[in-house]
Amino acid sequence: MPTVRDDHRRPRVRATFWLLDAPQSLKAQSRRMPDGTGLGWFSLGDEPVRDRAPIAAYQNADFASHARNVVSHTFVSHVRYASGTPVSVHNAHPFDMNDRLFAHNGVVKGMDVLDTWLTDVDKALLEGDTDSERVFAYVTAEIRRRGDTTAGLVAAIRRIAAELPVYSLNLLLAEACRLWALRYPAQNELWVLTPRLGGFRHLRSPHEPGSLNVSGPNGDGRHTAPAYVIASERMDDDPGWRLLEPGELLVVDGLKATSVFPFAPPAHPLTEADLSASEAASQSQSG
Image (cartoon, rainbow, N blue to C red):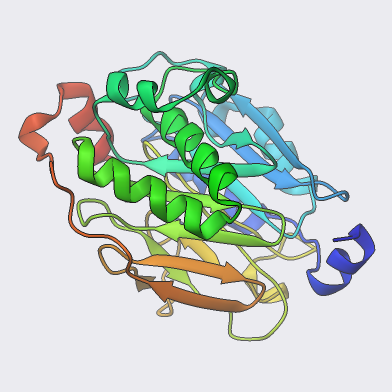
């Protein structure tokens, strides 16, 4: 859609409150999850933009500056607790493929098998080493094959759940106009705060551990513009936070949100006893 129409329908705001000032802001969470910081948003031309670093958000001057100054209708932000792959900028979320942003919280094993599902074109999109990015590459491939984001996402997660060992596959997928949030199955929480008034969308994401947010034009919190906030833990004491159901896929389009439950339980579920020490530690830090 043309930028002017998008801006008219979806006001551009700052993410300051959720990123820096909320009781459980990403800056605060990064003291528990210090292995990487990422902030993604959509430009005036609705192209995804990212700034990532392999350091904690509370130590990152660029993160604080972007949180105070960047304006967008959608933000995806993440703080990382490494689950075994190296601490590097390429392993920090969110990931960006084909004009979409992606964050994941959880553990999926069998990446050698998943790699066989990817073509050389799919693998060319990979920059890092995480299971999260490989899951995103496969989701991206299925979206391309099916020509529809929801259909491609559902098909990809169904195959992963049927054929690979899964501990948790909580994820957030964002386009310029829509977003998808999945809690699957039940090991890790995923919360949504819905807008009370009409107008705008707020986000927050998951991942290895992760998050996402937005706030008003003056950086004074969510009350300046109605928005959806999706987060791996409640970020303040607002009673409006709702825990997504296990298996719930929330699709947000503007101020309209729809929940569907298209997934069977994982065929090869993992328990905490199946995880390495670093994987278990990363999951214990997620919301």
